[in-house]
Structure formats: structure tokens, C-alpha cells
Image (cartoon, rainbow, N blue to C red; front, side, top):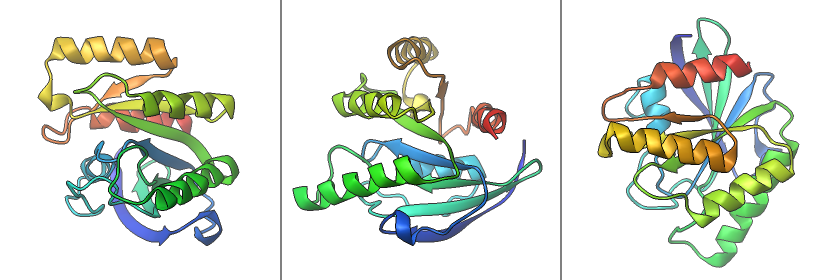
Length: 192
């Protein structure tokens, strides 16, 4: 599958304000600052489609992106990160409520894509999110971000750990070297 174009559609505070799109949709989940925006930009080969920041918690809305391919179009939904963010507890609780509502009720949600920083061990909130997805029968595969910072042996070790722990496919990813893009696109294609 090759990407022909990608465009930002809308930012929505919650599910009821999201566009009703009749396309397969993939929701990006991950801790704040795991690299969701960089993942989108690398995947679609556009450096500024999704806004990136070094400040955790910058994504505060549900951001929808339409991806046109040579096979079939799909939607990427960049969701607010979970975990550390420099916002109030009240705002974090609001994000969590909107996140759950979106994941449970979005009718075209095909799969979630949980991003995990390969430089660290699996974090408690990654495990909690994974348990919640399984409890609610929501499909998921994992992306190990920032793989350009660790060795090939360490990448293999992390893949084995995640696949054993979460019982999901885990795909390494690097925004610096733009490696592994085809593997991610092939996984998405297999699900649409």
C-alpha cells in the first residue's frame, strides 16, 4: 500500500463533535510525548501535518486525518495522550472520559494503535490501557517508537516482551531513519 495524500480534517473535543466518516478508522493511543504526531508525519511523509511538541500533553483534542492510498482510504485519529501531562487533574479526567467514549462508541473504529517508547520498560499506564482495551474487546496492535535510539538486539528483545505481555503484534518504528513504514502500512492494510 502506498500513501497518495494525507490531510488534517478536524479537531474535536469529544465524540459528538467528530465528523461522521464512512472509512476505516485507526486510533492512536500512547503516553504523553510518546511520539504520536511524529509517527503520523513519518507515516505519511509530511513533516508538518500533525503538530509536534516537546511538551507532554500538547494534544488535547481528537484530531482526525484522512489518508488516501492506492488501495483504500482510512482515517487516523490522534487522541490525547495518557499519563504525565502539565494539565490539571480535572482536565486529565475530562480527556479520559472523552477517550473512553470515543473508543467505545466510534462506529468505524477498526483498530487502535498503541504506541510505546522503546527506550523504556512497559509503563504501568500502558498496561492499564491494554487491559482496558482487552476488557472491552477493542482491537489493538503496538508500535515501538524511537527505535533509532536503541540497538537491533534491544528492539528484538522489546518486541518479544510486548508481544508476550500484551498478546498483540508489535512493530518497531523510527521517525529519524523512516524505517519500518511499509510494515505499519501493511498491518493497516491487513485490517481494512
